[in-house]
Length: 273
Length: 305
Image 1 (cartoon, each protein chain N blue to C red):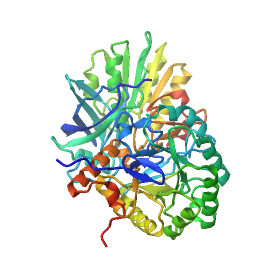
Image 2: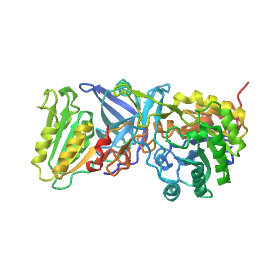
Image 3: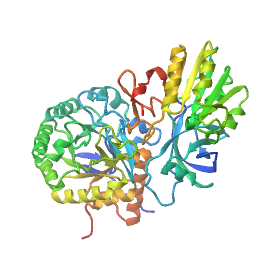
Image 4: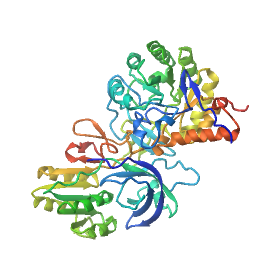
């Protein structure tokens, strides 16, 4: 679990901001000087476009996974997939092309890549899927990689076509209403793959019950597992101390600084919301 | 072209190159901001409150967003004074005045922390946290009861000859009375305000949002309250005042100076904009040039009647 380049604060130009199925949106930003993110890192985004007149409500920036990035000489475009869940994200969905969004990032520790000889098994649920695309696209270059994507309904499956376009990536889908892929929980196809893999590195991001189930299965199978946790945070870089989560050893860890990626066996699941 | 204005101020014996500091608990131990800000642009910074032993802080949830503000109940998580001196202080650049915030559950603990820090290089002075609203004991108890505040200020005054700021709680009936107590017991300056005691409710779970129940409200929402209290305190005492409470722009900072603050501290804005302090210093300098004012200290308490 490592960090990328030194984070920066920038006014990022909105290149596009489009609905992406269900309550999901896809935001493309041009960030001058962006140092490049590693898989699993995140950025803090202002809740909506930066207004001509300062607006303090809602106040706090929102942590968002960096879904994908494309680097050109001195500029990088970063892509964010987000779900409109409240006022901040509703305002973000109103950001128009040529407006700018405040960005601080890249932040947090990244997913460790699978070792030689390990199958990579990635499990994403709901908005957690957005944290896995960069990992999937790197992991396929190192060895057999499968991603298991789950959501309530087909329209909620973020970025499904993008994952399907990654060469050599096995993609399996489960939806609770059966509208796409297997009916039921995403843990079902994952469990089957885990059972047939002699050596795997397991990665999960999604609702806490999903991550916990994945972590427990991986532990039973004796495979290493990493989870990316979500939490509300005010700063994203280790000073507000708002995103503390309890760990097995009784101490608190900050999701923004020690995470968001944690070794699953360090997490105190009973202490997570 | 006009010459650059003189931004320097004297905060109770601490010489500051400009009146913009960053508030305790919102600026970590300083170096967290190095990617975003040259720390030497700050007038100074106030550390996370330090206790004799490390503290793990409160069980989460610890923060919540509120209208134009936020609640927090961190519970004074900090590395403890020893680790601060050994590991945190050495990596802070030279030439950045560090004001160490000090907390204890009883007056004797405050005094012990002060003794450990007295004379330590880079520490320009101390801010006594007499107002933390979200720990079980200490802090706000001292800041809310006049007789306890007398004892606390007396004890910390005895513990160090260095500049001593007392950080006051807004959760009191008369800020003027608390300010006069601090002045009478030998404090060099006051910092105000700490957060306002507050809470929020989650309608889904029908529980209080913060695990601690009560938290402290900060951010732009509290700014007019803070400005009023600085105004009242400045009329009650002669010692300098460091104004705190939702300051988010140079204009906000200037209003605090006009109401009698010698310097200001930025808090919640550091989370949203980690470069805010540098922008606000620049904004103050630009205002002075525009207003034809050569020294920022001429603005302190310079409200027209």
